[in-house]
Image (cartoon, rainbow, N blue to C red; front, side, top):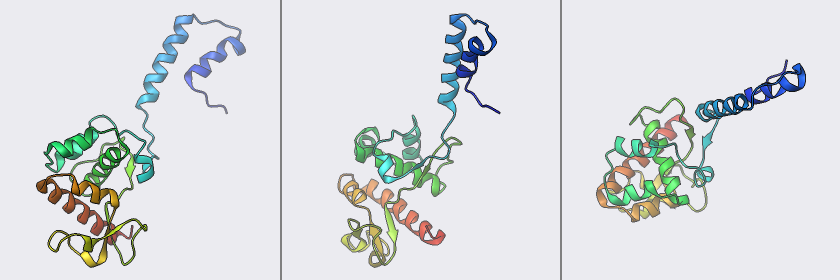
Length: 183
């Protein structure tokens, strides 16, 4: 058995059947095939911190995540519109955490996101993570047993207090969810 893409299959008509299709037929086959391929998602894709920096989220997905948790400040919107590596990382984290915590329904074609902003453990996930004790009492639960990603700390320093509160809650809930599930 041989599996072919439509362009390759119809390209073989000339070679194997000694038949000819019109040039505009080949162009139409190619156009339709490209349109179909663009709609077929890579469901095996898992967006990690490393991948997020170089991968644009699907159109409108970051905005849907932002709206699902009520973030409104221009600083957060600017991060969502940024094509910088940090901007993309924030976008993907927000997409992943809002789906993980049920703040919005994940789209059927949405890739999995394996990015965490905080972790509950006795040891940091990586040496550059910051201890929860770096935040003021009342600002972070479980300060003595949690670690915060450096990119998340940088984000917290650049946005208004109201949005910091929302994002800290999301990060803390994600850390607790991951701890309970053993991730």
